[in-house]
Image 1 (cartoon, rainbow, N blue to C red):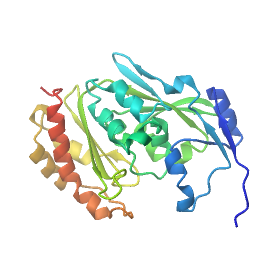
Image 2: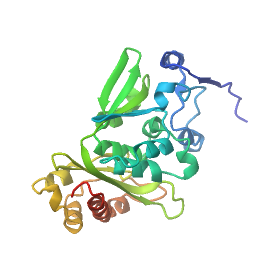
Image 3: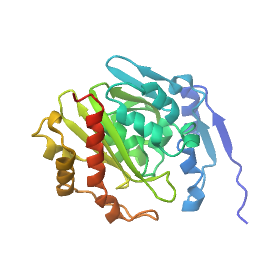
Image 4: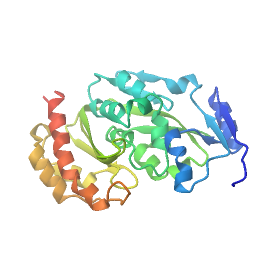
Amino acid sequence: MAPSVERSFTAASTIEEAMAARRQGAAVLAGGTWMMRDPRRGVDLPEAVVALHRIPALSKVEIEPDHVVIGAAVTHAVLGRALHGAAGFEGLVAAAENAANPGIRRVATVGGNLCALDFAAADLAPALLVCEAAVELETFEGPKLLGISDFLKDRHTLLAEAIVTRIHLRRDLVASAHIRLPLRKAGDYPVAIVSLGVDKDKRCRIAVGSVEPVARRWTALEQAMRPGPASALDPERTAELALEHNDFQGRDGKEAEGWYRRQVLPPLVKRGVAALLKTGGLA
């Protein structure tokens, strides 16, 4: 029998309290559902944990005419309600409202979804990539702001000391969509995710999640589409371009093999463009 481990739990009321716990070696309780499965993956649970849900500023969604600020402790359910009907955020709302299942959406947070290391199937990551979000971190040296692409690439290093506190979004999208292909058996974790958005300059942004270990922008497809105006978007033609410019290395997993994840991307793009055209923002 494994020796018992005395574990500690801290519910911080301020960022300062949370950072003090971090200095003493506590891990942030982010992505709790994923964390509780660590033993199955051969990873030990942390001996000390600090939770952020009691910090009022981190549970707010601030909506301004030109930007939105989302606290890291905002749940998927709250995020979906807060941005429902906000032009340009259709994709982010769909990501929040369709991730996992209703029970998880009521407790899973934005910060947890982004900070669950090695969890490739996070719905919010590609949606926030399309929004070109900035991630605010609290570090031992003070606040720091990073583009979400850089944050996702360097999470293992950054989160060794920092805490994600807020997500900053510009309101420069006129329409967006979020398409996911769930597993046939489990339903919660998608095989592949495609998020799309069109900005005020009529340029299309596309991001993919769950296909590779880390979500990323599909720049090859974006560049292939750039010569044409967003008003000329065509689902069939975009799917053809997606097939031609599919530069992803699909990850193998128990639920799906890498080749299949790559294969489903063009039809998901087709569905995504069709959803974009229905938003009304491109009219």
